Length: 389
Image 1 (cartoon, rainbow, N blue to C red):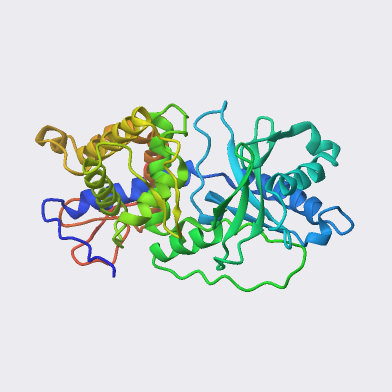
Image 2 (tube, rainbow, N blue to C red):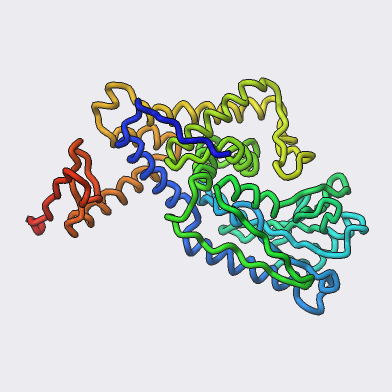
């Protein structure tokens, strides 16, 4: 059951609307560019085609290649800086293989990748997946898998290379849960048993993103700022799970983000020692299994910093209030990077100038700029008639 967005009489709508606009722009500036997305899509399709090609050693096992993680959820963020790479996760799901030892299945996929001279040069075996390192761009993590017929509903077995055992996972089920939390239903069509490479989800236009998707992007962006690009302590799957668990259906991005951070903070305060963060579609999987007390304390510090600084933007001091809405860019810069916030402000100024030149900009009775020129008591802003003089 969705929660009704709470009444917040202490928060003027002008400030909330201003923050919503700027948080949205920060998300747009933080996600993959169309060029980066096309590059990832091209590499993904090529690898998928190679793994599933007829005549390959994997072909008799009818591999199905599909994305998981941020590309599937629509929550990508750009690397923290030019020295970091973004990652794309995919699953190579084989069939009729769950009776095989996990390292045999892992080796099958590794051997197929190594049979390609290009992939052989950039191949790196990891704990559960096989990584292709595209230098200076991104890395592609390929997770070998077999269907988990006992659990069904998209559940899979994945090999743990270190322990040489099978681990349960369900990336498709997790995506379905996430989109349910976004207040949409994601129906996964049944597929015929054959070798396929499922396409990446299209790059969704910004205006069709859900608040929960944006919240995850903002949490990941602040994670990168707070930990200077490090991600091990605040893994994306942990942030996504916690955001989904505590999202209450609010439409305002800033108020929804505040509610999520409040909810997570309250839960963490009840757990001074390392808690379990369970996979919502497979309760036996603990996403926080790599935390010790020191890492958990650092995560709590990240969350407290995020929550405290956001509240400064939502509820500024009397001095900050008198400085105007633009003064709120200070806390936003601390959270998401000053340069990115300045670019968001520049884009807003450019948009307002364009609206003014089109005669579509007005001033409300409260003295606020608005592009809703037909609203009651709206005073149009005159077009620029100075022509550079």
